Image (cartoon, rainbow, N blue to C red; front, top):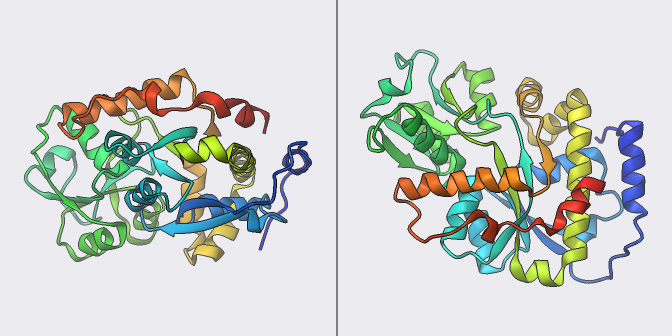
Length: 315
């Protein structure tokens, strides 16, 4: 089921589809996605109508395997959090960020069960926190420990993919779970979990549309078209939260209140790579360097591509 965009977004979408640059028939752009993310919002907003064959989608359970696919050349582009993107760049993945998204950080959180005695990060000293290695959940733990002036080894990190982390958290095998949406809203709405730390103030709330260097060189019109459509879709979603939540919950088989909470507080939007994005990404690099997780010297400006900014601003 697809909800009609508002008149302004409909006009924008029409202009987008009538853009003078006509893409030549060729192999589809290979796009990596995580469940319920870019493809879901683009389908709900209607920006994929008539161009379904232009993009070949691959779904990944988390950002880390998506970055691995970028590195292997299995996909051309994909949306990943700033943390896995940074780890990938440090490992030499031949890709750059061509667009960014910003969102509220209530949905990046360290959760504990509703009946847990834990009230603060300090109460987790010596206890186990599940998260993904190199994920934004991992980033949150590092940033939260620094913010609380606790040593990096104050907690025990258990690195698991989301499904396994959820199982470990639900069974009590770990005392806390550092995770992201929609898992945070699912746990809060459906299980009463509590946030003891969230990403507000201590993390920038960035994700990146990363693209392989060879795709930027050879598939620029396709990448521009994709970024333009994603920008339109995200704007539509923020202006139609109730409709998008209903559509998304049906697609993902997740209760609608979970989606409403997530979308209301996140309000994810596509933004150009600019000085503020570069500054925040350098902060991520510096955080991982201090933690000893990034040992190769990299600069944010070396892994960010600002040349797609005009596409985003005009969408």
